[in-house]
Image (cartoon, rainbow, N blue to C red; front, top):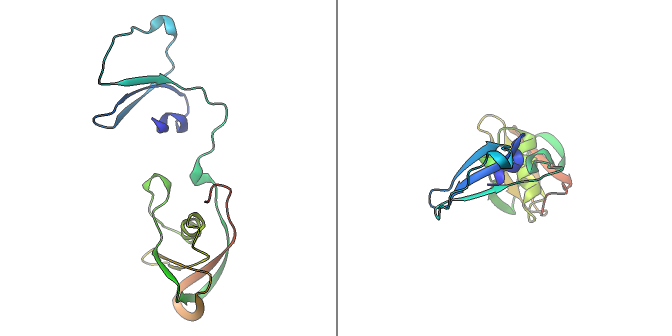
Length: 142
């Protein structure tokens, strides 16, 4: 249950592999635990000192309004960690940051469309789009 490591106060969990269900539990003292064998579940305890959510790390991008790219298209940017949809130019920057082939991107502010491009893509001027270049990759990228 990776989510236990991201949830403040979670130290214990019970996981049911067949359904993919994870139940997060507050810490329970050992003397209060009643153990029973159950071949259909897995339980455990975590000890985490420091955790940083991957989505807290961002790529550094340079943005340019009223411009886009053509050539070298890689397709649409993937949703962010945790299944969060792309909703801002920074989210689009982060999507490009996570793809090792991506160096440039175009973001459409109304539809939240994020298109990724390779380094050789050519810039062009157009209203309604915003373009960006990954200036520095985050430590979590590739």
